[in-house]
Image 1 (cartoon, one colour):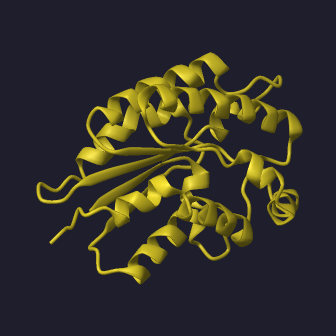
Image 2 (cartoon, one colour; image 1 turned 120 degrees about the vertical axis):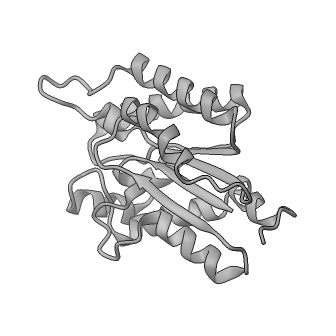
Image 3 (tube, one colour; image 1 turned 90 degrees about the vertical axis):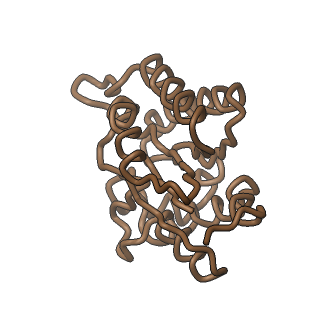
Length: 203
């Protein structure tokens, strides 16, 4: 099985002193738990908006295809879209961000099994409000496209350690404990577990 994790710096694991992020923790857990041959690619790029991801995801995935192995995609993005730039406006409008997500997920879902994970909160209340609205739009799109969607923003907003790491960091990226919290949320998600509990086997 090949899994591509596609997104922004929060997929990449920026500011994790253990250099694993939530993606690295997931992959480590899989390798430690069974004999499945897994090729996992972390395709998170810092500051990538949904427009950037829309432009690159297909080439990234196609260059990693194998004829004899199933491909799976996990997307997570949004923070770069809603981050404020000069003047207080976000890098993309809400309409642009939603349109990009719809186009991207529609195209990906037509070819591969897809999972989508929503954006986490930040230390900035206004920024987090924009992300909460975007999270709701993402959930609606995924419901329409029958793509499993995991919203993590509310859970992480209730995590003292996650918020503490944001405040002590750059306000957007957590540290090791925060990424470990995201890992636990994703790892317990039935849609994620299904990929490994299903009868599909790879030689």
